Length: 333
Image (cartoon, rainbow, N blue to C red; front, side):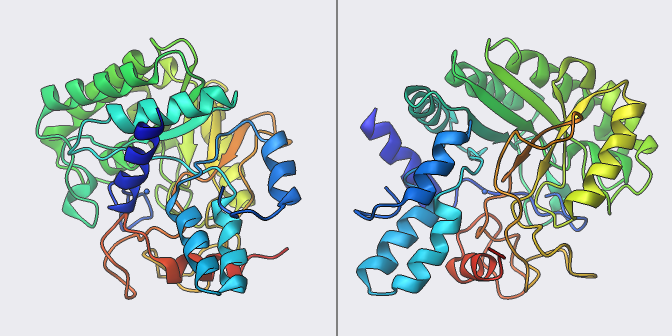
């Protein structure tokens, strides 16, 4: 299993846990030998697994060795928190998913994943790609599900996929197939006994009228999912997102939702959706949301991984330490 964990880390280092990056915001021992009571206290109370070999954790170790102690301490604001894993679509997801699920299980924690490989992904934008066709996607999601086994897991399913149907970015000839594949993916993932699935529903600044999402979400199988996800890879505040989510939840008969808070600490920067400067980390991942409709605040977008080649950033999903450091430095508290 140690080898599998190192394989997971190697994939992340290559930027293969990529994050989505659509124009509307849809869309990848940290402390060495120090006595980190803050991290220990957080980990003890959090239900989610923290990857000890994440890019942020490795960056903290590197900067510590280089004598950049202040920067190392700041980047631990990311390294010490659970973030979602995004298995690369062009590879077999089994090694990463199985390694993380097994490691989380040994710690009695929940591993968080993003399944992001739908055909015609991201309308050819920064995170373009996805499975070659429907059968390739079915094969990929089947391997993904098999690798989860009986572990406690939470899967955010296909950021942007439904919203891109609604806004017309995905050509109409692909809509029916996409909704069918999403429904099949939910059914397949839910065969795993301890897996929760949240189908992505964009963000409050994208599809401004949540009612427009209702029928597409229903056609995509939302009734079989545990709920929907909002704000993935975006910067809308908790307040804005929660108000929007409640309206959508009511229209869906009371479905619950999760919110990506990874980079929303300073809210959005008007007019800039891709690597906006001056942003901050948001609420750390937790199920203690104090809102019965919100199942969890999660760091779904991996803080410090680029949205795309904009604002001086590398390709989508690549680790960008300078941006990560900025997020950490701008975070209050």
